[in-house]
Amino acid sequence: MYIEDTGTPFVRIEGQVLKEETCMLANQSVQKSTGKNRLRFLVAAVAVVLLAAALVRLAQLVADSGFLAIAQQLTAVLFFFFVFMLFAFVSVREEESAVKKSYVTNPFVKQEYTLSFYKEFFLFESEHEKRKLSRTDIKKCIESQSLFILLSKSGHMYIVDKAFCKKQQIAALHAYFKNTYVRGFVEVKPWNKRK
Image 1 (cartoon, rainbow, N blue to C red):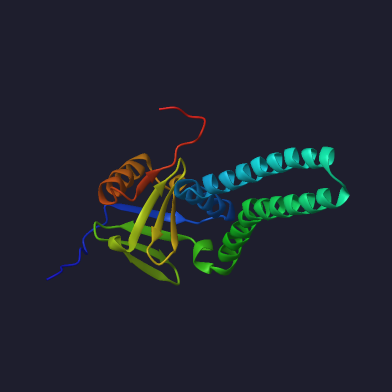
Image 2 (image 1 turned 180 degrees about the horizontal axis):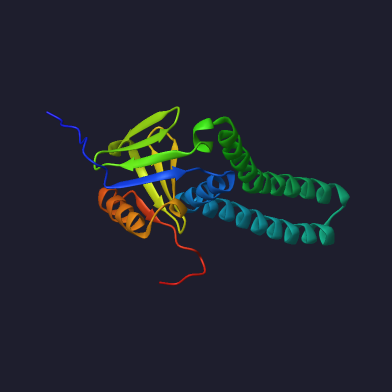
């Protein structure tokens, strides 16, 4: 028999309001932790290498044959380069516009709300809405310098802005998330900071 914890929360954060910039930063942290940025960099690097190889081949064709072979080779090279670069850079803009759209269309994130963290569930409450999230619904927790990002199994992103937290609350949430989501807990470190 399951007995729900209805006692006092171990962390309660009041007055959190998310800005669009915070949502964009959360999306960037998620991309960093899931490897999407590395994939885009890899695709762009492959495109550049293929372009360089094709240009070397094109130089050989210029020396050996006529205009028709050169035009065919150049058309193929430019087409594949364009496709690779389109994948690498346009998909970033599409994701950013999707995050902006979800921010604009979601009235809950723009309201002032309270977050209550219990051992077995999390409560997000605003004046007009109440969302309850079980800890087992979270598949991954990402901690950046300024945010905790909870990714649910259904694909939703829940953001806890550290700017609204006290140091003790940040430490308590860090310890809880690290112990609860051992394999699913990721700390995103800034690239220029060393351990």
